[in-house]
Length: 259
Image (cartoon, rainbow, N blue to C red; front, side):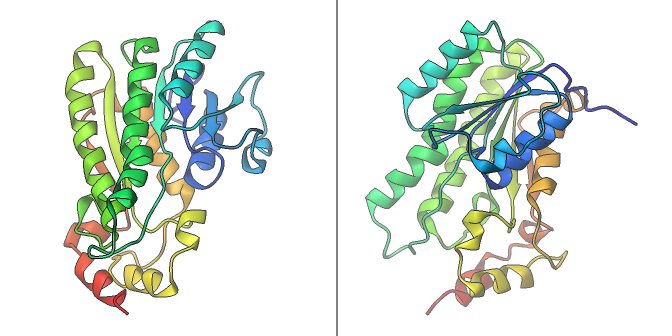
């Protein structure tokens, strides 16, 4: 069996309390990595508490608001105090906002941007000094960042994250730090659970594989991009969307949601 070669590596995962983040943390632990899992809750969320540790300190939980620069600074200081370097960062934390173009406010854009874009920037700025050559950063985008999706604040944030990721790949490359982006489609998570049934039906109609994705299917791609197996991959954008973004698809989804 081929190993992902993640044994002994330290990876920070944001938004790890549930959904994709929890799956990423769980699979990383199973692959032998030490995971520093972060989320808003003051105590370890149930989804992480159930992760069986593969070794001592295999999963450590730290509360973090990704939009808080001081919180990131405290996390970086704590990691240094443990004598650890950071081998990987998964900027997974994100929020959605489903207002349409003519209804969205500037406050809507700012609130989503602070988490989805500024949160990733702050994470890179705080933890890159703790990274050596061979480290990797994975930013979690969305199929909305590849299309003209209808929720304008969320879509704009994910397009902005693409730009941030490309700049980071260029700037970090000379230091041997890789930066890539995954773009999930309709994945069964607490975030998508709040969407209207019409949204799911319209999205599935535009997904060539004809089904929703699982958090493990996204996590598997994230683990590959964190691992030395992808050592010559940087600046890449990988859709994990069942083929939805490959043929457009956004207009019929948008039309289905007009009411």
